Length: 344
Length: 225
Image (cartoon, rainbow over all chains, first blue to last red):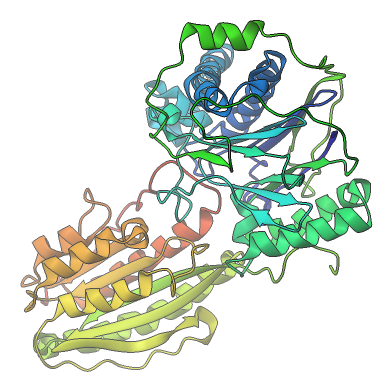
């Protein structure tokens, strides 16, 4: 199985009217058999003065650490080890790196008087100014590892036609209020899910900021969108979808007012022989695994777990032919901008 | 466009609910008349807010409470189509019944999960006569109740400010007081501006938007109520 991807990001109509930049960011890191997609939604209220920087920073860090996770062979480990790694190492590392990145950015670009007028508390809490959500999908030929902080939606479509949202819900995310990278509870607020590909192969994984779902009238929007996407991918292919993605998102951004961003991962339909995953000593190998905020597995990873996952020979050589791809949607005076894809 | 995945897209609902005290005491000193005038004069302001925020679908409802409570305007009505019809005073002050009516509308469904935070303004001149505290607790246990932007206008010196203070979202501002018809117009208009603040927040945030400064009255000495 090989993964392809497409991204787009459109500035919301309310941000166009107010002259606010697109605060979303999306990025992709590509490997030969694995791929990392990250989507972040910078907060909209005026005191989050640099949320566009915060979202871009979150995406860059998630891509880098996600790539490292794959290179270390973590996705080849038993399910409970993967979940432990995501909750105990990946998420804390992402948050720590993001906070460090914010510190560096503030040091390089101190708050202006105008910034402090909008956010008087920024001197004591600089992270607030960069507040953002974050969703990450790390996929290889066998598994889809997902982490999410804050609102937004992750939808998985399978070849059978099944459409699911594997990430557990969070009742706190209502009416534009969200958990955030800028809050001290960020590590505990992350949610984690792990999806197996092998039984009913995954066709696509989409990560969208909340502006996308909020524009749909139907509460069943995910099923409707997912089914349509499956049909388009089977009939026309990813290139056709990627060409139209900006226009689709633009419609939602125009009507709903919020920035709208999608990171779309699509699996080839070509069957390849994938070896069975190693047995799981905890017997939790069936079905998706999900971890709610603050409910990370109690068992701590032993150092042996990490050494094993780090030193274990990777079953097949993973070649990161594209090192980094960060698409950041920047507002232009005329209106929405399609996220650019920079391939290094 | 025909190829776009998914079904119908639309602007996000923004519910504005007015809770109006219609107890017998509101008949005294022209308070009911002043409230009707103030709400009628606020409608064009709401229309302006709706026009300034085309990505939000501003929908207005009105609850009246006296002996029991009921919907004066029960259908969520777009601002441009809203026509004020006068309320009449008479009866007790069953605020709890009104809060329960609103709570029922904040359940999902009928409340839309994709809605913007609802704005609720409570206007009262007296002490509740039913179990308002239990009803308020029920409202605040609802996710949309917690997330609602609640303001209160106390009419006159006999208003139960401590009750209204428990209702409002912004505890620093608390309930605002109107002591004459002009102040009532100004403060209800201020309360309605909270709708515009909600509408302007389309992107997620990590906190609750501040209410903004309360307009200072330039006719504070004209205490009528």
